[in-house]
Image (cartoon, rainbow over all chains, first blue to last red):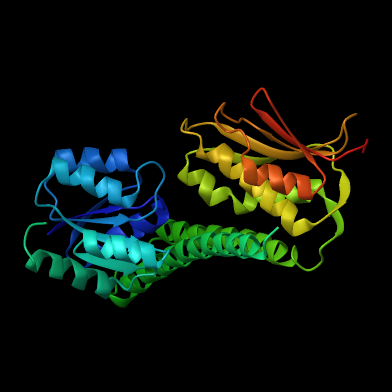
Amino acid sequence: MNLLLVDDEADLVSALAERLSLRGIEADFATDGDAAADKVRARAYDVAVLDMKMPGLSGLDLKQKLQRLRPGLRFIFMTGHGSEEDFRAGSSEAAGYLVKPVRIEDLIAAVNQALAAGPG
Amino acid sequence: MPRSDDLLFFGKVSAQVSHELKNILTIINEQAGLLADRTGRGLPLDPERLAMAVACLQRQVQRGDRLLAGFNRFAHAADLPRREVSLAEAAALAATLGARRAALARVALSAAAGDDARVVSDPFLLCRLLMACLERALDAPDDGRAVTVGAATGPGGPALVLTGLSPGAAPGQDEAALAETLGTRLILADGRLAIVWPGPA
């Protein structure tokens, strides 16, 4: 399983990627939409985990961009906001919607659910 | 000024701060989780990696402390409807509260050093006006800019000055109404917006 983690907080995604690798899950990370798009062009990921609010492209906009690059890529949103508006938008647009701080077991469960649901 | 606008503003700032705090807690959670993962699995934790994790945790604690100190000042701005206000402190508070919003707009926001001036004003409304002007400055489409906010004194009177504004960052009706309520003038020229109090400092 290959994951791409996208969040502008580098200290977050680097630690999360390392924690996932300790569990046998390969995870790359990017801290902005352009870098994420470059990675998706270069590699076929199974799931992309996106922050909802990032500099430049929002999570929702980035999802559309990555989906055009890799149809079938599944998405999970992660947010610190937890507003009703974000929840409606995020949960309708992705296979999973998690509120920070996220328990790693919950993230892995959401990833497995997204994979079980089939291509996005 | 309708109180509902004040409440909306308070809610908006609170939501931004809580979002930022969630990010800080998330980073602390992941760094602590990483250390727990490694020690729990009996994996080696080399001193360099441990020092990196400690430095990260300290950075996040300092970031949270700065944010909460600013949020506390903001919350107390509503204590009294009129009191003496340091314009340099008002500028520093706006820079702290606007930091995340600026990062999202890819704008480098900072408080500019300048001559402080003290005015008697409504601190909460002043914060609303300053943040509304800042919002305009950050809304402009050209990212990669630097915006500063600072206090200034001059022959026109004490002022709060925002620099680095785009041509489209002109104040709107809300800002004009707030400025009038506070007895100030808004002067926009050459990418610089000044909130000016009458009389010399």
